[in-house]
Image 1 (cartoon, one colour):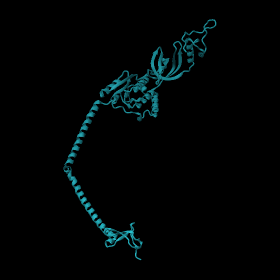
Image 2 (cartoon, one colour):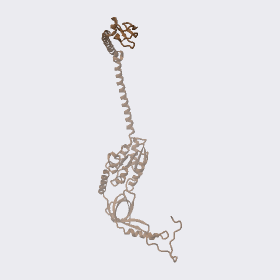
Image 3 (cartoon, helix red, strand yellow):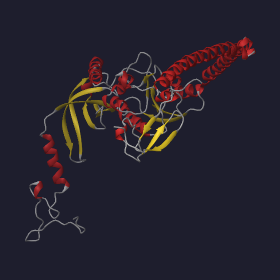
Length: 424
């Protein structure tokens, strides 16, 4: 809990003030170290540190009384160190803001102001050849990771409503992109982020602007543009952290850095490389004049195509209507009617012939049946005697006196009864 009352130094038995603790771990709210006690200890601790070789980019270079003061800044992160050196250490070196240096320096703590700086005794300028070698090495690493693959690139929208533009705070790049884009499509709108495009502040500012525009829902394409410059001026656009931020960008990205001959690594990771800012302005939006002309030509071609199609269909329809079969549709049915009549006649004759044949067969079979039928025997005067149960009587001995019998004649049946038995 924070102490709310005043902090006083502890006193000894005689009322005198106790000396400060010897060790930092022995300090307490009642027995703190005064600043005059802490600052020399920090200075002594730092003085025991060995010198170190450190690399960075020069910022705020100043010369005063044979002394050089500069800030050595990290090229990837927003970190920097103050460096002091003798002006003679830069003899023969062309050092200015933006240059890359490797310095041999010892840390030094100024206890009076509580400041940490480095005192350099040797300076090496990172040459153009070494910078090119580093960029080539980084290019190989990023290519091996697939950041430059064509499959990763996405097409630009045909007609973006809002274009994000990252450009210098002062310069022609903004004018070139905006003027050429609006000359082609006056309705296009821009979200512009003006940043530092060279020197130590370029990488963090361009990266921040890129992330800001990528997060804006209305922005449909982003253009990073700057005019020409020296190789050193364009170095920020080959910085690894900036290139990786561009690769992670979800919005289609256009790189328009320098001129046709310039090729920073940002060009390789972007979805589209424009040779100049002017070229970028022409490629992010379509040309309204060309689109209008194309639309007029398309309408004319469509009109001609439809007219020709109607003409062909009208000609074909006229030819069809002029055929006899359409002039008198019954003509088409006449052959089928003749064929149907002939077929019907053949079927009728075949049926009649088949009926006559079967009628003769039925007559012959009927004669045979009649010849073999008991009725024919009855027609000759014979009779059939049946008992009451319907059985035919064949033996007179089987009849009992008074038994009723039925006598079937050729025509009709007689009911009789026996009056005597069979003769012996």
